[in-house]
Length: 305
Image (tube, rainbow, N blue to C red; front, side, top):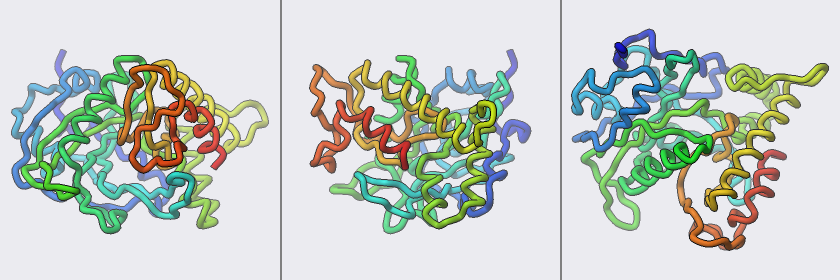
């Protein structure tokens, strides 16, 4: 079988451009000084209709660090808000991520491609827009493990060391993760515009989500109610799978809840060694809001937002 390479302009689309311009901001990734390819998910490349062997590691490192933009790539940072540990933040957005576009896979499905840790955007606030190597490798490993276990999730396509340092409690080697997903809209995407009273953009988000993710209204059902019903069903099935595996997401803020029904944003996360409902896995979760046993109730709370 012959696979095209990512430079083929016919592979990338920009369906998010169907959304109003206030939903995203055009911004290019910040170049990495010495990108080095650490991991390329070759089986996933082939699932997406790409040939991982069409180019050398140097080429893929440049692409997946954000140093090289190929035909059709129009990097964007998406706007969203979020309830973080129950407190509403009216503006969050992609502070260290760049949505590149969408691949049309061999089945005809659109798959969103995003760099994470690729530099500052207008939503970075005081952050550096970078990611450390450890969290990038964690998300790569855990997201692929979740996929292998049959859990809907974002997938890891590549991990690249940047050659730069990021400064947290200490200086750490920097890295960029390339992830793919059915879609990148979040509960927080709707909250962002609802909080501003922007009804027309909320309606545009509803239309796009219904079209993009195959949610179908029942007879005489409003589009918005159909979307809520569909997302609720997918979230219920998703969290049930988490619970069966002993998985703790760790930070179930509304900006970490994907409308597609996929697990997204693997920050502090873990699998239980033994059943303990009160187990938390975030240093910030001092009240146990996102404890393992509370995940179904929190999913419902998030959907109510």
